Image (cartoon, rainbow, N blue to C red; front, side, top):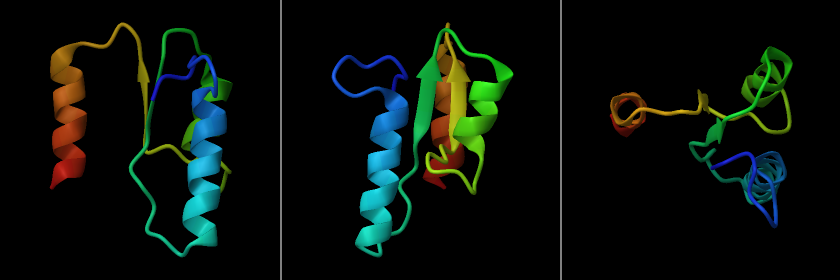
Length: 77
């Protein structure tokens, strides 16, 4: 999901997804965050497995098709 979504940004959406999974004893979904403007602190926060977001991947724009394909293939196995 894109970090800069209009109604609910990617961070807020990921936190809500993780809360829902926890409350309903669900396996974690695979979450990719995509952003064109980010810094290392932001990336670390999103990828922290102990944090409330815990995205599986953080992808920086511009994103090339082959990069996305490789990441999807990695999680599809």
